Image (tube, one colour):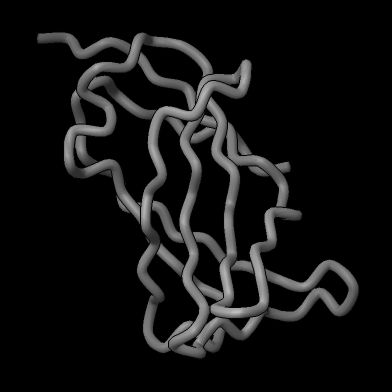
Length: 112
């Protein structure tokens, strides 16, 4: 599992880049098709969903890279503490895949 991503309440950054890969072949997952969308479900550790963040493909997506940030006030009303993220890969007409490791986030209070 990846390291914990550190965030600050009220921030809209950092930009987080993920590389999606196939567990069997260990190769990058080609998500370049226009019918494939990727998002991250941002939730409390207990599973309460707070927001769904749309990812954008880096370059074409052929290398499995997507990015997202916390713009739009996602971190404005969260309490400091531990959070998790679930990666969702959706393909038009083919369903949804959520088999990736959960992301871990830690939010701290703003110093202001």
